[in-house]
Length: 323
Image (tube, rainbow, N blue to C red):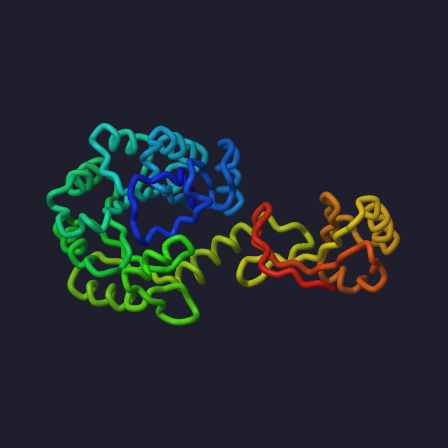
């Protein structure tokens, strides 16, 4: 599960992909806005989460919230629920000890680019040592761009891992990226040209380096998360696609009074109640049933669709096909 603690961050990384909507002091568990602890726990249960990645913004701007959520998840799901956290800050001994006692398993530091060539003169080395003393696995995670070789040298020297992520364009970083001369690898992805090759070059010279490609994040990580959520939340009539999206039919009643007439018609057609869900002026139904009965229930006061959407509450609609 991705636990986005806050969208606030004191740094101004030119490559930051966080959307404008998320750049606020709000918390999200995956795509669900968190209003209470129940939201966090329910989201973790929905996907049978084996662990949680705490991120932001800068989560350690809200240390008490971070400590609370670590304890909450560990108490609910046990010590085997792996929790890692991303931060650009360097926690002191007091905070690091609190993180350890709460149950943090791993910390991934994200030093700003301007510090990459002088990390020995910063407190990152001290925080890495502190973390390892407290049995928190420590490492560094940055985008794969020029200068990362200096971070690889630092990581190797301090005996910690280095995660390199393929740099990607987003709506919020595109202008800054283009101004620095970055270009797209091809027309099929948001990945930056040369980012993967640079990671390959660095990894041949240093140990304990991991590379995460843009395609892996999209095709594997997101897909697996969607499938896990869909398998736990799909209604009896939802069809789960191989990508983890769900398909269903929808009857949209333009006039609210017509919903009762549609419900009665479906009952007369002996459509099983478990194949129907009513919400507002819409009736969700198995798409294959709707396809079969479309001509029988068609009316100017109704719109009939087959919908594909993400398996979240109010999830993103991928496609809406009129019948």
